[in-house]
Image (cartoon, rainbow, N blue to C red; front, side, top):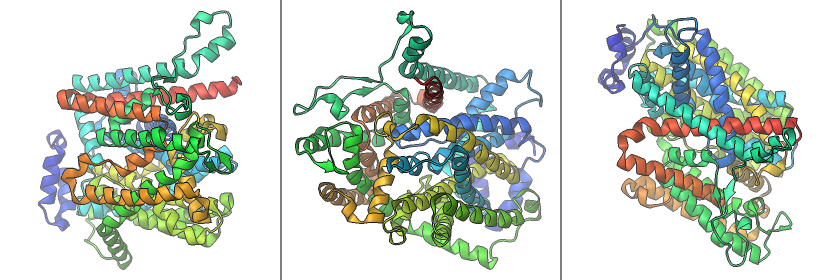
Length: 630
């Protein structure tokens, strides 16, 4: 294939493919897009992808515990790798760093970066909140790998149908492909983007160091140099108390974590404002009422502070998140129908005839069959071994994970929005996990981890498809990434969460609080919910359904109504954190409104750098604090 064809815009390529009959698309792709002569999955790409993906998985552990969100590593890792290779191209062996090599590297880093989403931001810290002992590090890493492998294996047979044949857009995959094209063709502009990411990462790291570690390290190693013990406060007190309750008991401050501002820039103005609204309602109205009336949760009177109040507000917040998930999933019934019909077609051997050239570059179905069998047995065995989950229930969780992976993959391919099926899994297993919230929690962990990796794998394959990459090598890259991510993410989690005291104090961990609340409700019934919280939860469920229906059927009104997910997460965020996220979202919106070119070029790079820099430094500081017993 000529370089001229390689530089075709993705819009032009997609239009050309969409205009062809479905059975001619593979032949056209092989003749006009596939680039067999270009280096792809090299040793240096695999190593760089594993390292950068490991860094991003660490960042996602920290971000997930702080905000409840994890962020895609693909574009960030692509920019970082481009900058590193450009800076070292004269000394690194292997010649020019090609765009397909960058794509292969992204496949590794993306799979690694999402390892935090396989349970480390939700189910695993929820176990800690329940007072359950954590798995030893090696077993925890094995658990994450076992969960993630299901999603990767499910994605492979779907690739040909969803990407080759149907040409589903997978918008994030298109964005990643466009980013790679831009990096390898824009020259100086690409280096400016890389420099922005690098400097923002340095700023984030410096702020985290002086906020979390400098004073402690100076006190230990340079006790006489008190002038060097410079410290940045974690929060600024800018609000008075409410109804005589001190501001610190209501988390009323301005958080100084730059990661929160960067997260706001990425999630957008509507979500940021919704999150602030939910937090405002919780801390200015609900929390004072709880304290004044001495409401109890878990047999303890609520006296203020994030952990105490969140134990109650997690219930109405879960109502918002749960109803939004179920309503959104029900409204995507077509994705369910299409997914089930696709499963039937696979079992019946139906579908377009495979182009002979595809057999040489696609993942062989023999690999899929063996890999799927191994992944299923492995996942069921791990559930039984680590959490005493009965074999039949473990197998049901795996089957549900496979089916819902199809649904999530199709929804992601069509809209770039993955239905939040974790709560759906917890409800589906409710009757079988009566009286045991751990079973409910960890079977849902299997579903969530698998669906996230299935969607990520297909998004990644879409990017490679548009660039002319070899699918088989991308599949191998994904497997490398899953292993690498677990090696980084698990130590990071264990350093950040040495005990349950940091959850609800240092980390809001909204995903953990809502997962715990849902698991207890599903396993123990409505009796597990405080009566006062139950009444508000009934209201938030109705509100969430109404808001979800409005944003689905009245899209023009969408920007004028709050996001139910944002409201729910806001109710289990410290007010200072919600304020910071909203501020970041509004700053990014303002830049986009008045300086659109600047926003398009640099906002994602700057925000990603801040998240990566602060997260990595926070993990390093936490590790050193544990080592030196500070």
